[in-house]
Image 1 (cartoon, rainbow, N blue to C red):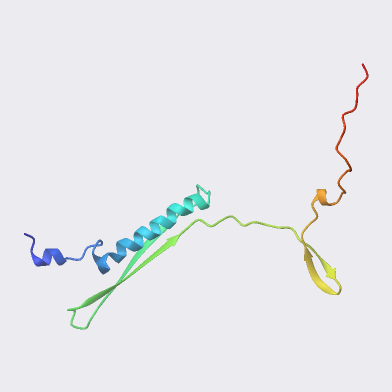
Image 2: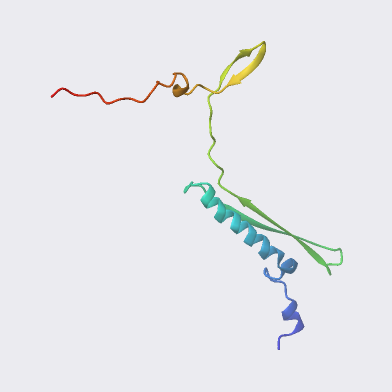
Length: 117
């Protein structure tokens, strides 16, 4: 049978009642999801598990703060051209015209033209 000391020895799995391992698992799930969300094979993702350890003046009691941070690939920026001007004396931004919006729909459907034999 294991001694009481061995059962209570601090490990990453039992630290903060398993919180360190849980934080890592959540961060790892975010990294995996980021692979699907942002298709950038060159972008590196990272997980940082930080343990900050302090103790009392008698060095009999210590505490550990557990932090977990992720660095994920970011989506590429998306641009949009705007047309700037004034409308009724106020600054205005408009989306550009689409070419199909500039012309009326032709009436009727195109009809095949008979070719002479």
